[in-house]
Length: 123
Image (cartoon, rainbow, N blue to C red; front, side, top):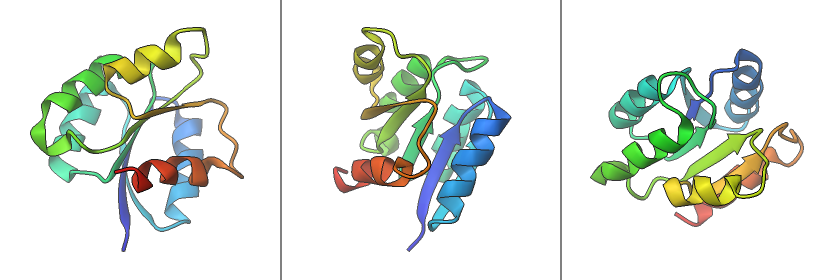
């Protein structure tokens, strides 16, 4: 069974790498390049997992997470922040906005899949 994963990321290189890793490991990937499109796409595709950058155009990742958590059908979908924001308090801010977890960029291709799929196990 394919895992429906939504990636909300504005950097094309990051989007390519994350999509490549996921698609080669059985994920059905949807992509959004800004926060507004990410919210709309999440509501239409009903993903099993959402990977969310924090620095996004139109709506930042914190706003996206807060908006997605208002939707009853997305309330229990794991949202994992994947971000270069690594200052003290950033992880807590992401979690309090509704993210289920937090992974720092740059991602490690060798461990990334295991990291994100652990959030599916908690679902």
